[in-house]
Length: 303
Image (cartoon, rainbow, N blue to C red; front, top):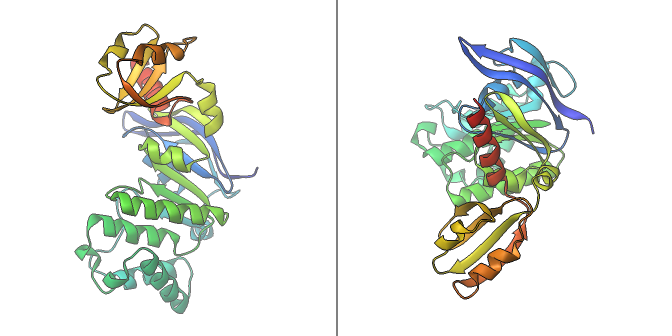
């Protein structure tokens, strides 16, 4: 599959801090691609180099088959982590302005701005100044600004920031709709649950380096199937003492249990019978959350 983005050995240093350190990966065209890592891992710096906001010290960035140039930016939508809105402009006028920056005629820009405001449930706020909107509403406006030009590539840096669960679902539905239309989406986040549900491919970076890269199902299979999800009533603290247990991610009445290599999951079930009221017991591939903790924790320990 042709790559929408190709990064080759990118390096970016700020003073004595190397924010990106020899980073390479490919983003397949038409995919939803997760650029993952904890805060400070180098995600935003990488996105700014892709957008040509800052230049790498060395390495190469190719976007939609070429190096960045002025006309290419009109084919890209970008939602930065830090909002790039004009606070004193009215919402509708600001979106219309953003559309004209992408080359739209004013009439078309006005039509698209109105359509996006309605879809994002902001129609009643179109004559308000941006600064009068809540943080979540401003994030919706920023999202509309990224998509108003109907770009071939959309780059979203922490798009769910400040969003309540209902609006997160709204964003998710719109992202899937845009993706199914053939648009490539890069989703940069440290929220593993969102990435696991939306992304087909990921790159997990730590200290500016890729520690995992590829198709998400293949990555999960590579980490084995020695994980158990269990819902129950009762006190399950005794499970931590079992020698077959590696780690437990505890949510109260729900556990994600990672077993030692070669362990038999039936031993967990046998130990729990008679002590817990089990509602669900399932052998699963490890979650992206647990893979993240395992990989990032290991990388941090090696430093």
